[in-house]
Amino acid sequence: MIYRIVIIFFIGMVMASCSNKMEDIDELLAEGLDAKVERGKNVRIIYSDSAVIKLVVHAPVMERFVDYNNSKDVFPKGILLEFMDENKTVNSWLKAETAIREERTQKITAKGNVVFYNDKNQKIETPELIWDEKERIVYTEKLVRITQAEKGDTTYGFGFKANQEFTRFEIKKKVQGKINVSDLVTEF
Picture 1 (tube, one colour):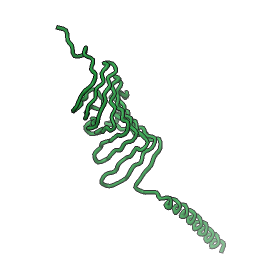
Picture 2 (picture 1 turned 60 degrees about the vertical axis):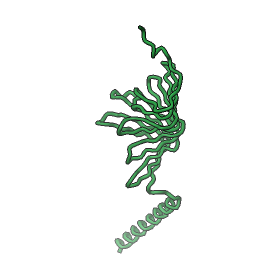
Picture 3 (picture 1 turned 30 degrees about the horizontal axis):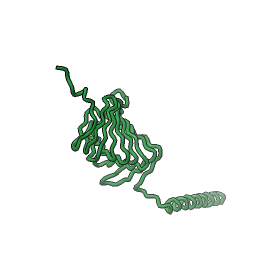
Picture 4 (picture 1 turned 90 degrees about the vertical axis):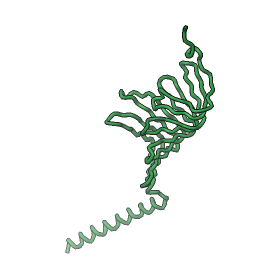
């Protein structure tokens, strides 16, 4: 008889706790949570290849949209990419107001006051820049301004392509700017 009372009491407690949990779940669902969207704050993502860190991504907010065909990460409040060499030394950076990374294409499209610069005081400014993870290049078809402070050069043009270390680059069309002539003149 005592066992029946204990069992009934235990079942009652379990049922009461389940109903409270179900109410909590119902409240969360009523807030409009989307199971296909994961959100994170103060995100730091480390990309490596063969256990060697190649890139660190910093973002105040990240939203991951989970989709079978094309998941994507959205960085609505800005992003900072730090590109590293084999010695784990940061040698170039990319900053932007917003960015989207598409998993299928493995590209990050950065938009809004995009600045890409390296440790040699070379800087590109553009409204949009795409980083191709597979090809290890950055490029755009938009207007670019390239500043090389040590040389005193400033170059403008449309379309840009560079390696992610920003040691080699090309401007595709309508190039103009101020170039230090001493780099072009050689002694006879």
